Length: 453
Image (cartoon, rainbow, N blue to C red; front, side, top):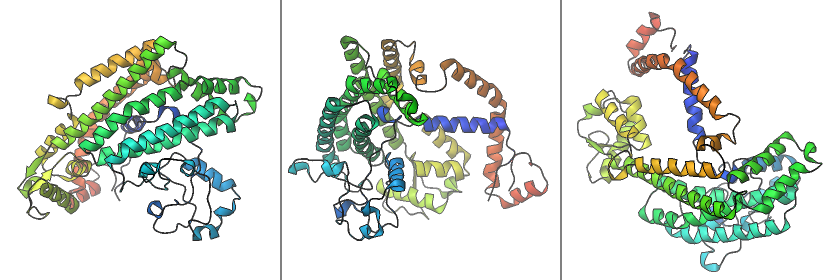
């Protein structure tokens, strides 16, 4: 195993910083990013089609759901009889509480997989035709739940936080399923369905984020005599929810709130279009290779995938051994080319195509970026912030000035190291491929400060 050692701290810091920013860039449901969902799921679905094929050795807390942490917590403290080993002998031997078990829908959409209870998302059977009726039925249900919560809400954990998370979690999971399918199994029908119901989903999110009864209930918890008795984690959740409500426009006057909501709808539409352009640009790039020397170094798996892609593009006789091979920007092929291809010109061509996706022609995202920046500034002004960066930092420990100061420190400290890192990457590329060169470097101690094999 090759282990990189003694890399300068500046390089390590730069790598870590970029990685953290990539992780932080992930899209999150704004109302659920502060509060961990606390809804427990049943061990198996009532429908065999959605149940695991084999019995699990332990209670299957669903890793794909944001409810996972609560599931574990419930397991640890639970004395419920249906958690005993005997309960796994039959899927119908118990009926634990669940969100979907109380989900009442018309018979016409009762078989919609988006509305079924499941332990793992049924990606294999969800189709574009399920999106419109499924999302609309789900929105109707959570809107009804929100109405009930606003009527009965009390400033307490069981009467506020828990039912609120039950509302948020189902929509988060189902909408996430649909968007994931769009990313990996895109189609015109699926795009059209998502585009049609997305404004309705955003409308509900805005209503939830601007709910005065929920906002006032969280404020009442903070102002109550019991505030100091709450754990630090719960205090953090309450503070974050109050801040989130303000950032969602709960304190705005009617006319400003209406303007705010229009901006949010347009930002969601632009973000959706931005992603579609990137996806289309990724699909658009195709490079047919007929000479195997051009792709020398690619592993057999990558060659097989490239040949399979060529077959799907009309080259029926393509094989992994003899080609032709279709190079695309899809992650499996792109990563293989960048890591293993010895053809420097090919690596450069593919790399430049990847980093310039959706930057020209019909798929150019530049106008979309400019419009997003304009609307974000308008949103910031409505919320009495100077710019959108201040909104972003409002829910973080940092400030805009501190962030800019840190970025400048990183830039000045990492520039020279980054230039040196180019040479490091080049050497590492050949070390992985030439055992003789690797042995020479190691035994002659020519590069001890950078890596050890």
